[in-house]
Image (cartoon, rainbow, N blue to C red; front, top):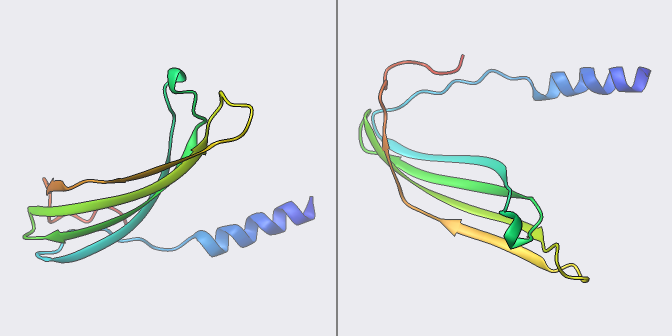
Length: 106
C-alpha cells in the first residue's frame, strides 16, 4: 500500500506542469499526440494505438495549415497466426481560429 501511495505522489509531481496554449501571429508549429483506432467487426482487426506528429504553419492569427503524420499498429483476429497490421497516414488540414486572442489553458 505504501508503494502505491509513493508511486502516486511521484507520478503527480513528475507529470504536473503548467500549460499555456495560444495562437501566434505567424510561425511554425509542431505537436505530438496519440490515440487509438477501433475497426469495424467485418475487418477483424484488433483495436490498436496510434501516434501522431503534427507539423504546421500559421499564416496569421486566424489562418494556418497543418500536416498530421500518423503511425500505428494492430493485429488480425481471424488468423491462427498473429499477423501485424500497420497504419500509416498523412493529410493536409486548413485551420481557422475562431477566437485567436484568448488563452485556452492556464
